[in-house]
Length: 197
Image (tube, rainbow, N blue to C red; front, side):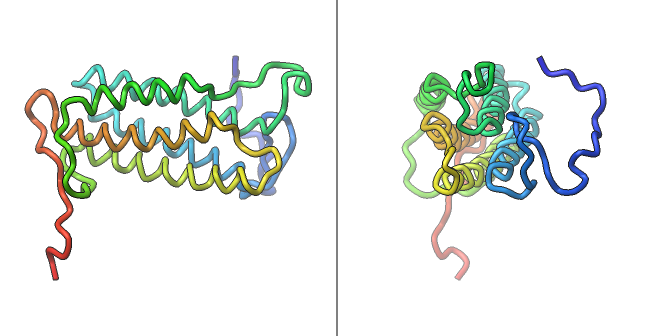
């Protein structure tokens, strides 16, 4: 378990940080950008949850995602190392986490009307916040795919699948929040091409 007694260490004052392996790297490298953006995604989910307290099913899904995002950060912070190399079993994203997202996407999507237009980010506060989480998670995915190509340690297939599925989850969850089972939703906010020309 992690114990944090002192928050500032001064070890990063010169622009480096430590990976979980102990290796020090510049704070701007793709691996740090990747898990930093995963952390940013997690922070946006925290904001989303300010608006989902009245929906225990969706809120529980988001709580699980927040925990998964810490798992993903730990996975990315421990590049390509095996248990034998590290002396302990590294925490990795597993296929079941992405599969759970697919199940939850299907559950949220089950009663939504088919889309006939692109959706604008907006509607309820929960939906707008979920769209923000979607766009931040897409940025994390872009960084992770770049990291996978640029770094020989790469990113696991399970981690790439999870981050790809996550933005799908946020999109469907935003639609679900706008149709709100409690009847308070406004429905989808649809794009009208060329509406203001």
